[in-house]
Length: 366
Image (cartoon, rainbow, N blue to C red; front, side, top):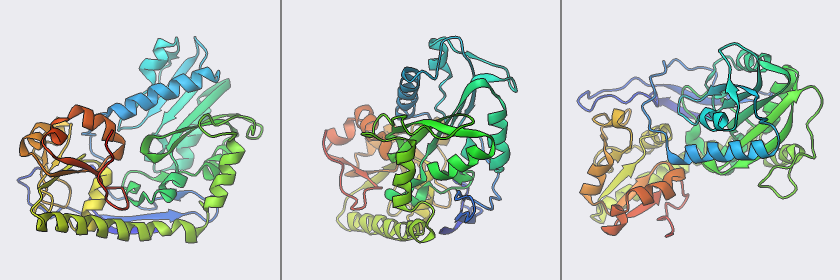
């Protein structure tokens, strides 16, 4: 459905003094005609230790999720909890402990088994889901949070594809996967993180409860989500393949904008040395002559460079000191947070630009 050609590993940030070239590997999204799961078939990369700093947006979303799931009755005080987390952060454990839930030892049964963006990192999806399901105690619940394929399609988020992320779930495909381990979705919630993430509560046996409202959708339910996805075409190869067009148009738009800014004498730097930025910069053919540096909050990335480019990763204070005319933000979810954290950019006359905006328009004030 989506072929980004040979791409470097998105979590491998070489030291600036290492000139490269960096190893590159095929990066493709396939759609299973049988189960409907969008996935990687081949990933020859070896994951590196996470270097990112956990953004406030992810922490806030986790706290919001705990509150909403608790209000729905799925997190009773005294319940046992097992969490499968993402290497990128977002743990619920501290918030759950504050509500009287207790973690169990590895392998033990739990009343609540939570996977927060963790399942997608497993090469063997069937085995990973079966392992999580097997740990749910009788009468317990399995909670699965995921970046929705429907969101990726609707917003043209082609650069969500990366090595190490083996699956891109529609609710439709995930429901089938749950059925294979004897579970069914019972309730769902939407969140604005990454443009649209979903959280499913699933229990053993039965069918999806169509009366379980999705809290941010008027009258929506698990059944409504499936209908929305069918209308969007999450299992239609022709519709999913439109991501390839987005990859071409977004990369061309970024390159053209940077060339125009350079010609106008404007200084443009970036913010957010994230995996989503890697494929975008590589596809757009961006180097240090167009983008002088990318700032990031993670000290572990400082003194390194963006994979397959000569663009250095610098500390936020270096970004402020440079007084850029524009800052290309590669993580739009951080817009509110970063404008609050680095008010000096706009105070000096600079502007923040959302690179995922199809028109590459400056972010609206306020």
